Image (cartoon, rainbow over all chains, first blue to last red; front, side):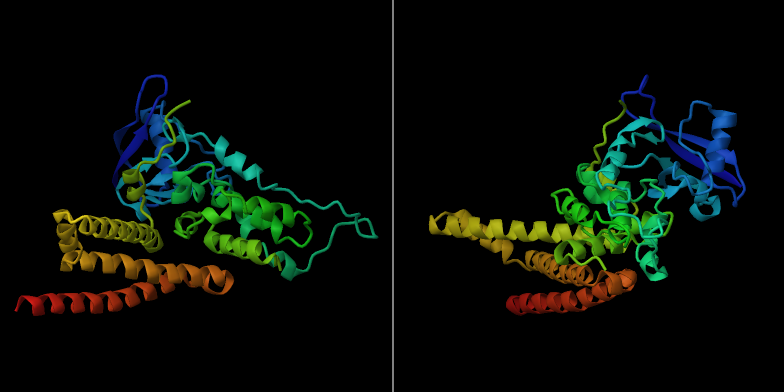
Length: 235
Length: 130
């Protein structure tokens, strides 16, 4: 099938503003959008820039707007998006070149959540790991799936309006540790979440949940955080 | 480095969100509509007190059936959608997995209540005309 791709292009060395370039190429319905982008870069226009790494939905490098919605290019089949495809960079982050955005503010917000295990208590008597029941592990299982692709954060209207808002991905990192029975930093994290740019800026538009390529119920997890902020209950 | 991050209103509105995103947008339109109504109401009252003719004109505007339908839309959608958000926020674990079904129920409730309100406004306006 012939696929028409309209791709956002921007070269900071030449362009004052971005523009769209259209490419027509032959593709199989089972090809992924990433395959088509690779084809264009390899055979038609080597200057096309986009991030990709594992190409299997694990590294989270190739999140972009495909036909107006955030998706991973490596998990999106041509047959699911049709033969007229518009590819644009993520919203709300500075565009470095073509489909590449500056992820620094995104990772800065992530780091604010103290995304690591905090536990200064001595190890158990046997000197081995801190044990956890399957139920305790299941409590935060959902948010361990996050691959930090930024599809959620850059689909959030609150983040579009204000990039000081930590954003759904950072809140997922907080959720992952706050509800971990081995962690002792919940109080600090809940205090961070209670700040002006914390969880209260989530207005439940569910764009994050719909955009997440890992199927994480993000808005629900943020709801659990909001409730924990109010009640202090992290069970 | 590169293009700024600014997301314009039109770019944001072009994002293909699902029904909760549109409910989010309509919620804000509802809020802005109510603020507009209150502002007009205060201005009209002030103008009437001063004996200015414009007060009467503004009163005619916001008592017109079209404006009444608009303001009913704003108030009812804002209230019903706000209720949905509050209920979901109170029971995230139990109810948020069903957010798609809940928003459909909300829209059904809104259509019934708003439909009744519009019917009432229109029949009253027609009664005045006859």
